[in-house]
Length: 551
Image (cartoon, rainbow, N blue to C red):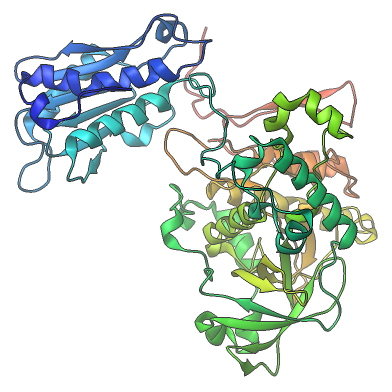
């Protein structure tokens, strides 16, 4: 793509002409890379009349109207954007009002004087918190930065997956001309999905086939039980992130304990447990640690104890839970049985890898959830002791999470089946408090099932309560214009009703005591009163505005 980028060449334009010439390559970029399904007419950059000494531009195409796309407006001024106190000047405020008047549904307004750049996300039903907020961009190449920012925000408003004919992988492939490694070398040196370059696999049939051969090899050679009784493992702690690095986010909506309803706060206080590390007197040493060694027992869930922290022996270690992430055993089947089929359907290679995940991603998801839930650890969720890299006796390194070990019972256990009605009600209400905490924390569980709820009793007081676990498939809000879909209320309700696996709770008690959705929860559903039944019960929150009615 050829475009004018030289500052001296652009300097001969008028202020409005300069802005138009600077942004025209953005439209050219979309015109050259667009999918055949869109852009019936070329995208163009057009001037926007906003008044004296205020120059505006935006993008337009015939497809925008049908797809309800409103492009960002870019505004250039000849004066400063900010006063000496960093506040917006009256001219900027005037320009914003004129831009909104021109396009009331504009999602973003980008303002520049070619020294400073400010991005204004306009308030909407999806981002009401952005009224009067802006992001100030620092750059020593404002013209180039303006072009890149404009293209990025325009792309963000276009329907996803339609405007570009490119695979869904962001990284470029490695050199496809490099010789293929032998199976023996790959089998010996590759230990996880991320050791392969997925962007290369989807473009190279031979490498894709080798990936599936590697999976067949490791699943035949190893078992999912990677550690055994008395095995000693070494872990790297703070170098990987004891409570995860702060610069990876942050998530937009931290858990504000002031927002926790009084009854939920009372419940959390009543079931709060002391950290096992604090009880054992090794919490401070663990917080400072760079390495540790653990010793395994063997059961359904890995249990471990510390043998040393930074080479200092630990005399008395509590039993902890260790969750290791090993994507070698992800249920991912080769879509074809023979090489001939691979040849015949070569164009579908990308689809073979659609469900592929990495252990690092799931470990980070769970680690970020626990970090967000730090104020309630030791009550409705376990104490969390960070994400670490564990070296197995075989030399393979896996990501793992260390947590408090919880003695408890599954929802389908005889313990639950023998609970009195009053104790079942306490457990059901505790589950409701847990769902509310996840909602308030903006942590959405996308994979609810009965194995994610443990029923237990607080040591010393024997208070019945629930503990939520397994946050590897959770999501949070990371960018303001992509709100997180929260459905924890219905997720937990479906679990307790036996819709996501067998449970021993009385469904009548669940219906009577789980409670309604919170008033701010806008979701509702019609749920069969019994699995696969014909009678439904409508579940919806209380009316926030009972004083408003429609005729």
